[in-house]
Image (cartoon, rainbow over all chains, first blue to last red; front, side):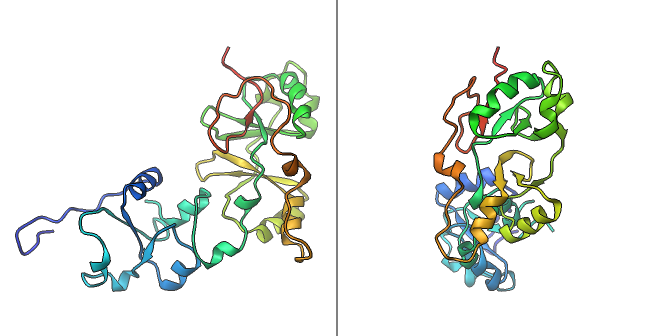
Length: 77
Length: 177
């Protein structure tokens, strides 16, 4: 994806559990994109909730731009 | 691609309102003895009684559960390899299952314990029905572990401990020969 400024945005990559742990220790943000009820019931430690339909520039403004962001949902389905 | 289902199925930490309810992973006995396919039944049989357990899980070098030695298996020829005596492919469950579901399963099948593994099949421990029953009993008294848990890990150290990672089961018989 190319920003209006001409800069290319980094593309998402798939990571595994051990990488999640490493990146969390390094300050990465965790975002659960499931509905709020599911997030409130159970989520990964330290994760914030931005339900997928609400995922936009405004709701992601709380994320630090210089840190990786790990986005997860329920499973691969 | 794995999500939070995979995370919880591996017994990793969680937050949220549901964490107030115990899961099978909270009731795990992690000190269950293990042996390997090439061990002799007699060799294992000599060690197991000293650990307070009457069964022994058979795992490969990656800790993946392959079988279970218990009951009739102990009557196999003493020099028989574990591979020939074990119950192959025992039923396993994940640590994020609810105790009430597993209690229903254990009652239905008349089993006293169930093996708990990660989704990849790696041994995490064993859950005993008595612990589940105690956990789900009316809150007359706070939940306490079983007598085995209160006594802690096996008091008798046998053979070599090949894997000393946290939560690793005790290795009864070493192949580091």
